[in-house]
Image 1 (tube, rainbow, N blue to C red):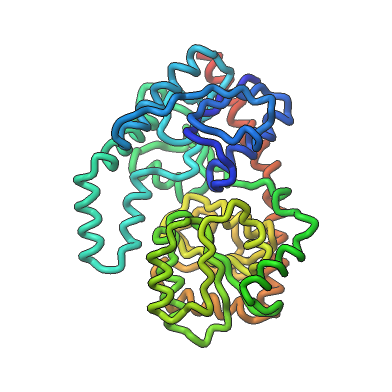
Image 2: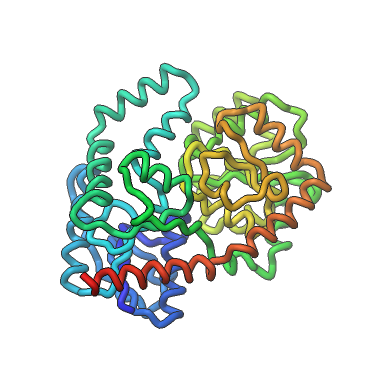
Length: 388
């Protein structure tokens, strides 16, 4: 099959959707499909050499117009090339299959308001969005994706996102397929895993048996870092260290950590090109997110045998079997509830049992399972295209 894939940038080291796309491309190429990538940037060394790269030139001008220009350029390029199926992700059109890994812009904006602690902050943020050209531009582009002339099949990573398609755009079951996200677990099967764990713990002064949590995210506020810091400040008795990584923008949180007196418990690692040592050094994941369609970091944690604390605002919660392999918060701002969850995983026996359950959950849903279901949707799209 000749498959086109459209996304602005595919640099897997950045994590998230870019890592997923790279994993999918590698699997498609291994299955002898002809893959064409349409992007402004990619890490050629991280992708198979068989991939045909079509460079979409970066556009100048305001940020809120750049996605429109990228989408238009992609649409022209894929039409010239001709494909059996075109796969898109966000802010593109002319695709046969759309995978909104980042969820819906309209839902993300609405749920994101909840990260503001006071009513005044939330009101100011809402007013700010109303006067933001980027907000309206991305919203209009999203409406074109889902409600425009070209109506793609939509692969959502959770029932959580499916409910938003119905709520915001009135899209029913006929166009939507629910396929949970997956990761290539082989990326976390390093032979020197114990050495990497010990090296990072020793460098940070963490004892071998000291309970250690991991927090990973690019948008620290949206992913609930403030809730986590609040839980630790409220419960100074919790015998836990926390590794925080993902974004290089740590200055604000460094000040907050110092103000709360958490300097000896929080390790702000910032952006790390290889996040595996942090996963290996941790004992469980804390991800009190305010919005996540189906967080890949949860799947990565499970693949490493880490039980997970997350929220009902994360589609990945649908994969978990709490309380065996993780714990859920209904409210991402529930500081006291999060502290209680962390306390449970500070107990060695509870943590070990949950780690075994996490490995079983990871084994039950692999990237191969995910890939096979994606291929069924692509076959369906090809049939629809040629039938038309």
